[in-house]
Image 1 (cartoon, rainbow, N blue to C red):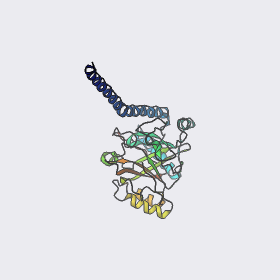
Image 2 (spheres, rainbow, N blue to C red):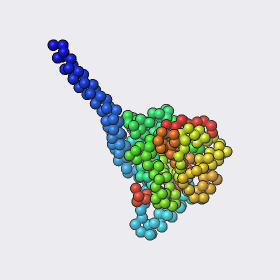
Image 3 (tube, rainbow, N blue to C red):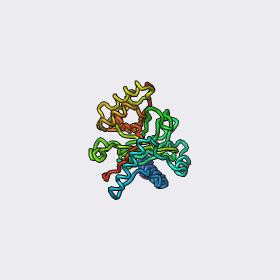
Image 4 (spheres, one colour):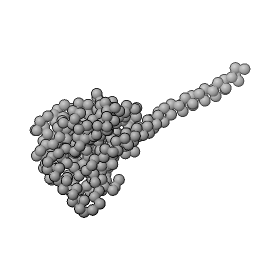
Length: 298
């Protein structure tokens, strides 16, 4: 009797452990995929609720007369140094009701992405948490925990994952890999950050891979001398030339900088960083083609 029971027990045990292994595989692989899908739906819903907040200066004139008018208006505003309007009261309320640590909305027209920006108590919170607080491997775009939330520091860092599907900062590397993107914007590449009271425009002045442990790059600038030294080092080996005019203006006026940083390559020994300089006014192109305090990097 005992000999007959043993084979049955072995079969039962094999089935049990096989089922357990299957469940573990579901938890390890299906759950992250579900979280990622849910995160995508979450960001899409938020973007839809803010769609009416598209900047008024993004135009596609239908005639030469309209193009001349648009150019004249941009030129006039640039000379007066007026800021672009920020988010409406309703849009800002939508952001802070979703996440009270909201900084604003990052829009990068050339790369066709737009994401809300959060700021955590440290630089790990939003590595695996969406803007709305949902667990997800996609995480969120977030401002360095030690930075001023109004982006008034000499240099501020925004971090996000380099997702394989191109979401978050997954498309930043296209700037270096697709020459057509930079060629499509001969007047400069811009991104902007829309906040409660104003929208800040930034002109891209360089981008390149950076070592994850490069403390001379991931540090805060505290003086004019630090600014000059940091900028010279950061632009060394840049994959992008924004033109002598843009570089001369940046070096001469020392505008505040915002750096977008994401992981790059295999083994995560490098990041890909895009450096933007604060600009008074930007012609937002939408091409047809698709000092010593170290800042911990994700």
